[in-house]
Length: 354
Image (tube, rainbow, N blue to C red; front, side, top):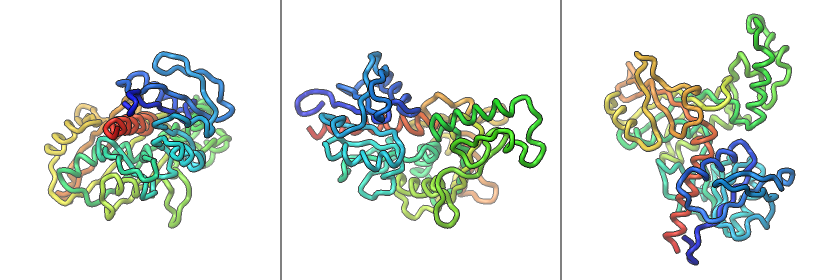
């Protein structure tokens, strides 16, 4: 409750996007801590009516006026839109939960995963950021293991879904799958490239292919997705010296990211103890019996909230290292759910401060 006894007002910015749609679904099904919910999007989407909490709500155009009287604002928009409008919302008095990369490396903006580092009270800029969806696929499980064993190094390979690039990414993959379906493509150099034609938001065909690049180019040949995993893992776990190497790969999956993780710890590990930790960790489902064909795959975890973990193995040449495989719906816990959880935490903190 606010000092005047009312529930806080929430604005969802980017309500008409792929992640925004999942945010509205979550707001309609989770414990209701909100008073008024305002839906905000670009000028071209203004006037649309979307359903949240069982009621039709008209979408407002993104403007300064949209944040008047708003206590918490969840942003699910491109980086450049967040960079411009998040400070406007914060200046209007809202605590902003931003899902973009615009503020993830800002030392005055907490980077939060509620299961790992829930406290967001220290927010000198009035902004709380969430990490990228690839980091979220693994960080809840790694946070739990770190508490027991003391994490010292990560080597990560990601297998990222097309929907991370929004509706355009998912639509491009579906279009390409239709183009190559029922053919004998994939046997000759360049035959897939010539046939699909339109790469959409990707640098190469995704159908019948994997693309070892996600994000923007950064110094040294790294992609922004790869350096993001490094910086975000360090910040969330409070380990500024953590050694992290990541390779990000785009795969022909519509929704749900996967990561293969080699994690090294200060202390000796056992699979039995790792299983105990992961099976009781909030936000994690342990699904690990490969002898029976039980391990997480994107096709199984899509549409679910937790991070699923399997293939947990102690490395044969290092008793302090584990290998594991994790999957997570990149639109849910990878984006929308984490933002909603942070917003609910902020709402509770605002009530405590009242």
